View (spheres, rainbow, N blue to C red):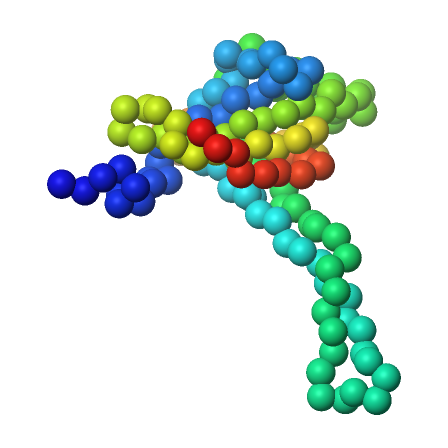
Length: 152
């Protein structure tokens, strides 16, 4: 019988938790159908050594993070929609921390990522189409100061 460490985590069981003010979990905005943009890249600068033409030294200069993209069915009365609306119409931002966890078959977190000081940068709503019987999808994009893997 395989142990839990032998079974790779699945990508379709996850939880998203927004922490208002960095500490208080938002119990309404937790259901998302898709999360993407979990990425970090070390930037480098190439330095040529005097008299050396065969190679260059690459030195780290900083880290760039992708945008966190969250997709979900539209939610009426969502605190997150209120925050996005304030950012997009009043240019008022209230950065928050976000914890995303991968869950096992019993909905117990097995791994996670913490996004620090995230704030809205883009909000889009799917097309309204009278010929389709589909759910309205909100796509929320957030910039963040940094993210890190967390032990669960």
